[in-house]
Amino acid sequence: MSEPTVRLEPSLKTELRITAELKQSLDLLMLGLPELTSYIDELARENPALHVDPPLWQTSGWATGRPRSKSRRVSNESDPYDPLSALRAPEPSLTDRLKAELRMRLLDSRLLRDACLIVDALDERGFLGVPLEALAERFARPLARLEAALVIVQSLDPPGIGARNLRECLHLQHRRLGEPLPVLSAIIDEHLEDVARGRLEAIARRLRVPIEAVVEAVALLKTFNPRPGGEFAVEATVYVIPEAAVQNDAGTLTVILYDDVLPRLSIDPAFARMERRLDLDPRTRDYVSRKIAHARKLIDQVQARKATLERVLEAVVRRQQEAFLHGPERLKPLTMQVIAEDVGLSVSTISRTVREKHIETPWGVIEFKRLFPSPVGGSGDEATPTTSDAIIRKIKAYIDAEDKTNPLSDEALAALLHQEGVPVSRRTVAKYRAMAGIPSSHQRRSPGNGRSVTATP
Image (cartoon, rainbow, N blue to C red; front, side, top):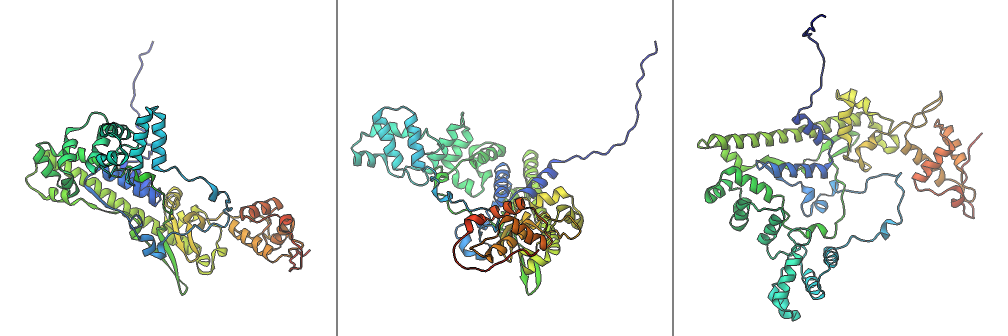
């Protein structure tokens, strides 16, 4: 029997390895503004070297102070109107939620009444701004009973509810995590102002702990909610925020990116100062350098996302020039493959760039993906490729001009479209008519005289 042999044979193969840095760049590219902002906030909580100023759309008065970029309803003529939307029940308030949770606790009737009394006294932050002594005197309740009821209220969700000040609110949330961190407890008690000013080294010196322990505690502190009742406040109008605009200036099309809708990122000043210091011990210097390096990579990635969006939008504008100059009815069928070839990027990159983005156009704020309409009715020698939006507009035009005493049937509308080189079936016409919220010919029929539009043989 021959002995088994082991041989080494060289081989050549190609592999695509996605690094953590590349994956983060791809993730940033595909996120819309709200998701991007939340993602950056999450990274900032993990990296104290990253300083984040919120975008202007999150600050008070932005929507009214900058009308041009203020969100409007996304223009989508194919969206049917939902008459039941105005009849939907409002979300329960913070008070409703807390009282419902109290009833599930099966409390003693007196304790339940006292706890509900405290819930009614909470402000919009979820804080108890009225002293218990004042409540006891006003409602003739024993103070000890109200103190017991407050303990119950402070055990409800969300954590921090029923606190009498910010420190108590943070302590309540800290205790919910299990075994408290002594460093974080001390920071909450004595060093909140130092945290706000970024004086982490000073905290470490006073508490006589390593800087890493302070950074870890502050990172955890930033996950706490200083206004636990705020998430149940009445929601304001939701705005759709365009990231870029296409402007028509006397026939010249210009792409403008709105810088103020993105979070403004920079290196935290305290960490920047530590990086320049010469007396840091090697361990602390390594920690500070790594955190700053990660923050700078994120800043570069956000800038790359902006540049890619601008590059892709400019290519789309060149392809859809007629639509931006003369109106959305001039939109042409366009695929992401065509734009990918124009800009030298992959189709998947184009798809990520378009996803969840909104663009301000001369005819309103629209989803970026609507600039990539699919062709409809493009088969046959005499067929002219068009888009679903264009077909819906044609159907609306025919119906606006029809004789209301003898409205056009779906079959007649299909014949009219066929004459214009758009061969679609009756069922396709019915689908687009329904998408536009237009009733059937039977429902549109009304007595009286009107104009007549008919299909010619």
